[in-house]
Every structure is written in structure tokens, then in C-alpha cells.
Image (cartoon, rainbow, N blue to C red; front, side):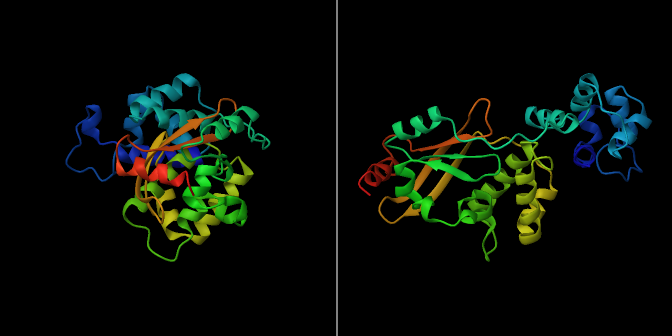
Amino acid sequence: MELSGFLRSRRARVQPAEVGLVPGARRQTPGLRRTEVALLAGISVDYYVRLEQGRGPRPSEQVLASLGRALRLSGDEHAYLLRLARPAPAAAPRPVPENVLRLLDRLGDVPAMVIDAGYDLVAWNRMLVALIGDPATWPPRRRNRLRRLFDTGDAITGNRLELARLCVADLRASGRYPGDPAVRALVDDLLAESPEFASLWAEREVVVQRTLTKRTVHPVAGPLELDCEILAVPGHEHRLLVYTAAPGTPSAAGLKRLLSV
């Protein structure tokens, strides 16, 4: 059903004029009609309707490429479409590779951490402890970055809302829902607990996170604006997050003060 819902959401997003079609005066369908998508993709209308209804056969790579062009998918969205059409079995959890742990130890002057596919914080360095506290002392729920982001009684607004939107889009882009049991449990819990998450999840946005900005106020370092680089670990579900500050900025000076914490 994820494939069906994704196709419908992307069809509704594309306006006829964007693909060289005349909208017409009596159009009631938001975005493209199914017949128009089929025409643009070079497939039969019946075949496309069955895909949207979850009844069609597994589409070929050629059909998926044609649908990606017809629906004007981004690179991340097209990769997600391929994962939905050809879901891989959920891999068993694996420990963080030793070379990544060594790299964490070598990053002595910047905060860094490793997260898994379900956004659980699984490894970190001393500078991250100085920045946010020691995750080893936290209950498991708090070590999940998505749960922590949405586990609040307050409305999520401003920079936090933007961060939440990016993280939800990134989680969906992994293509691990609903096949990965851990990711499915996380999504199901957040759908039940957080209206904000449910609203963002329903948008079906797909964007792989490669960089983001974290803004916070630290009792020792003061106001910080940090660039976060998100590096995938090849062959693993893990990703390394490294926080840095632009040279010569108050944030860079603040990070230096963290070295003494």
C-alpha cells in the first residue's frame, strides 16, 4: 500500500502545465489524472490504475523510470520508488563497525554520534556528551532522536518544526517502512502518540538528509549554530553525524569552550 499511496500523492502534486498539458476549464482532479500519468509514462491506463490500487504486477525498471519522469520525481524520490517496488528483506541489526568507532574517538574537538536506521543513538564521543549530556544515563526512549523530537506537550514550531519535517522525510526515504520491524514499531508508536508526526507522515515527503543546522543554547558554550554533516556508513544502516561550526564564529569559540567540560 505504500507504493500505491506514494504514486497517488505524487500524481496530485504535479500540475498539468508543468508537463505540457492543458488543464481545461472543468478539471476537478488535483494534479494529474490517472489517464494523463499513463500517457506520459507510455503505459496503459489499466496498468497504472492497478498500480495505484496495489493490484498490478511488479513494475519493471523501465516502467519505474518512465513513472519517475512523468511524476517529476527527485533523485531521492525515484530511489524510494525503486525500494517500494522491490522491497529488500529487513537485515538483522549489526553492531557499529570498529572503524567507525575508531573514527569517533579521533574526532576529539567536535561532537559526533552514530545513529541506526530507526534513529536510535548507538555510539557517541566525549564532545557530544559535553554538548547534550551523557546518553548512557538516559532511558532507551530518550536515546531515539525522533521520539525525543516529538515527545513534548508543546506545539512543535519554528526551527524545531523544520527539523521534524526533515527527519520524517528522511525516515520515509530509507524505504524501511513497513518492512523493517523496528522502524514500523517506531512509526506506529509516533502515529498513535503525536498528531504533529501523523500530519508530517501523511505528507509523504521523501528527502535523504545529508546536512542540517542545529541551533541551541548551551550553559557553558552559549548560543551555538552548528552544521551537521550526515555521512552514510557503506554497507550498513548506520550513519555518522558530525557537528562543526564555521571558523571564526562565536559558535566555533563555543565549541572550544566545550573541550573543558
